Amino acid sequence: MVYQLELHRIELELQNQALQEWRVEAETAMSRLAEMNGHLEAMVADRTSQLETALQKAETSSREKSRFLSNMSHELRTPISAIMGMTLLAKRLAVDPEQLSYLETVTRSLRHLHGVINDILDISKIEAGKLCTEESEFTLDGVFDVLKSMVTLGASEKGLQLVFELSPECGRARLTGDPLKLGQVLTNLVGNAVKFTDRGSIHVRSIPVERGEHQLRVRFEIEDTGVGIAAEDQTRLFRPFVQLDDSLARTRGGTGLGLAISRHLVTAMGGQIGVASAVGEGSLFWFEMPLKVGPNRLAAAVLPAAADPERVIQSDHPGARVLVAEDDPINLEFLRILLRRTGLQVDTASTGMEAVIAARSMDYQLILMDLRMPGMDGLAATVEIRALPGHRETPIIALTADVFEEDRARCLAAGMTAHLGKPVEPDLLFSTLLGCLQQRKG
Image 1 (tube, rainbow, N blue to C red):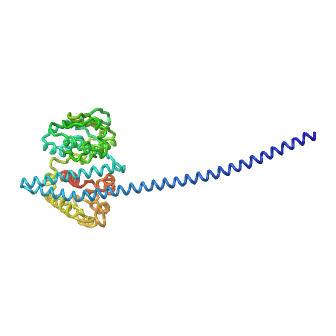
Image 2: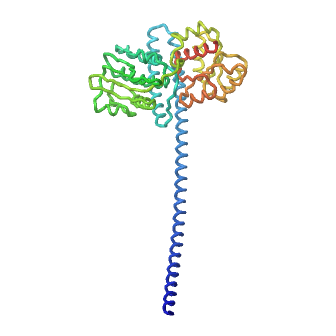
Image 3: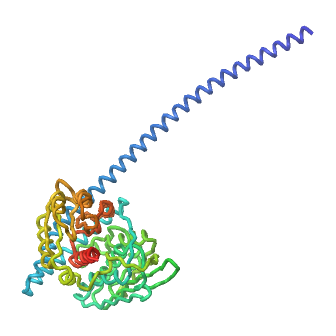
């Protein structure tokens, strides 16, 4: 009995010793686990801090790039606008055919330079994720009218037959989408067709491929009789900075950005783009995209207010008083002369504060406002003018070299009526002015 008790005691002591050892091991393990957990938390916190720092740097870099692009757009477009404006005025005054030829050459070169700048800025905006699409009401008739005005001259100079085949169903439909981006894609593709076609014809088509209650899917085709593209080159066409002929002896210019920009725009608008071609047999570029069927209203930005808005302003709005706020003296003089030749009374201001002071003493029918001016910018001036008695509904049109989507949004948020980019196109300017004057008069 004593032996059994002693044996049981020994067993308990052994068990107790084992428990103590296990407790020590468990405490050691817990201590190590706590140490590892603390180390892991420190690593996570450090990594999180690194990621936050990297994100802040990326956001800062993106903002800096956006500011740089905006500044570059302004610095490049402003002098081009001044040169183009004065050249347009000179063309209106010139009567000698040789002088007109020289001025037309200057105009074409400026438009080419403007196109190159647009391509570079667009691809930069794409890479920065800043190129967005908008929605407004329009008709394809209006988009094709603008397209014709931009490409017909180049085709006729090469003796090319330019044929537009716009489906009546597509042309008359009231649509909602981004007509400016759509027009940019069409202009790029038709411009390329003109560039790479030496003889024959170019056909531009719009074909309805699917019609729903609230949506119309349209296929656009640009078919030419040009040089054609080899099969192995077609896969590289829509990459940025790619030129199929990049030799020193190449005969056709370009930045190699137009098709890459077109692909991005078409994709952003929910569509697809492609090409079918063979060397010596011409090319057919196509893209399809869905367009919303909009209400029975038309977009003034795409559809011209009249066949000749300048003449309509002269006959229907003689003596209307307009304020032009612009700090660049050459652009200011160009606008002053252009508008006065149309029969408008023009006051000028070279700063935002001068514009506000002028608006306090005069009931203007319309105001053209630059954005970047010393002291008080155009946005701040617009806010001040909107608060003045009698100017709550005055049309205020931004006429600026700041042409990014965020610039347009800032203009609208400040209370501006519309946004026009520099270099100014007189036809678009007069069309916009006429629309605003008619609305104000009505």
